[in-house]
Amino acid sequence: MALKVIIASPEALPFAKTGGLADVTGALPLALKKLGCSVTLFMPLYREVQQKGFSGIEKTGVSVTVPVGGRNVAAEVFKGETEGIPVYFLKRDEYFDRTYLYTTPDGDYFDNLERFTFFSRAALEAISALNLKPDIIHCNDWQTGLIPAYIKSIYSQPLCGAATVFTIHNIAYQGLFPSMFFDATGLPRSLFNQEGIEYWGSINLLKAGIVFSDIVTTVSETYSREIQTPEYGYGLEGVLKKKSDSVFGVLNGVDYSEWDPETDEFIAKNYSGNNLKGKSLCKKDLLKEYSLKLKPDAPVIGVISRLAAQKGFDILSEAMDSLMDSGLGMVVLGTGERKYQGLFEELSKKYPGRLGVKIMFDNAIAHKIEAGCDMFLMPSRYEPCGLNQMYSLRYGAIPVVRATGGLDDTIKDYKDGGNGFKFTEYSAKALVEKVKEALDVYRDKKAWELLQKKAMREDFSWEMSAKRYMELYNLALKKK
Ligand code: ADP
Image (cartoon, rainbow, N blue to C red; front, side, top):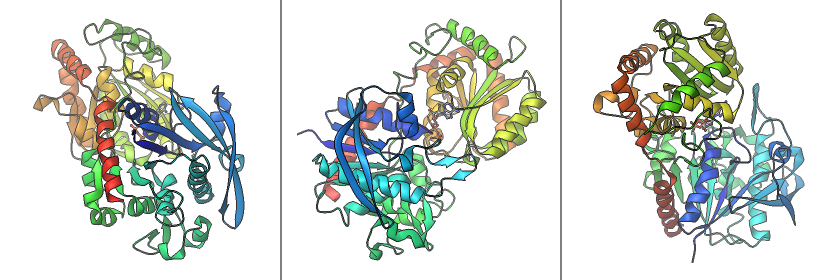
């Protein structure tokens, strides 16, 4: 019998995306299906999904009602599909017909607890109403953290066969809310304590997911160890340590049907490791896109990122003058916190024609950057997995990264015979030194091309990771 897996996620490609989570929940179902699992996805029906006009998203005729914060709130269940994977959408416009998914440039939506309590509980109601009988419910991030708690309490009966796996994509985002709203969850008060959902007097939805799930995973081996330490655990290191025999790291894979310069439809010219000629056309195209005017041989380094402190922008801004003095060009694509938007806009005025900045979310430009850049920079303070360094490898845009989380697991330093450049100390000085090392190799055209070819041969496809998830699903069933 095929293992029946439901993946509950607040975002998934191709429907709605704010970051790497959507890449994962977009690609993992397909990889699991190839291994023989039966996979179904659950997510909210956001404005973005309604506006993009996906064909085939239709009413199922099922609607579910859940009590949230003293009201009975109904959701209509819609069904669509992506590449043969059934996707159920919960529609409640009051919560999901909004400009952003969770956070505006000025902060989080005030009613996120209500929105995602609703999503989590309505998903369970819908799973019962549709009689889906999953073996596994695979939950992702704080928005779905209540699902394991419901299954271990008020939903144990209707879903008694299901084990839960909870994946932490980023432990810094925990879904913290004042305790006075606890009753909105409908959970017994007895779960609001240190052993349960309480975190220093507040509700912590990520903690709920960690404590009540059968297996906890995170998105790289190194990050699974890091989050059990005070430096990276954001206060949850103790909770994780206590459960450490159920905590595993599974590296995210790359969807090479989306991210491969041989077939990429967004780039000026396709190319491969055997024939890199097209890459120089892609570079020209990128420089035009960003109106950059560089010396013919100047290397271009790219940044595609959420604009958040995690991504290392404090050391990058401190390093900027030295980087620019070394003669490189830089392109930045990102959205997020206003302070970093302002920072990059200022810097682009300081270095016209050499630093290009686009404050927007644009998948096509993200592809053009991978194809057109010589190097790709990720100076993260922490990085659970990181996808762009793996995309960059395939595009021959050599990653320069800080050794943390998934960056540490996927990039090996050139000096050690590796596929990129990696620095350890979180400082502007270490960043600049590493970029200079990369520039030295770049000037040696032969060595650089060899490095590019090596990088492009790396393979981080989903198959391996999906196999690991299947093992962990089976372990979750045993542990439940
Ligand atoms: P995180 O999930 O922390 O944002 P990841 O590296 O895991 O970081 O994933 C980020 C994903 O989002 C990548 O696919 C990246 O290309 C994409 N991305 C981030 N910012 C943008 C943007 N402004 N425009 C297009 N894609 C973006």
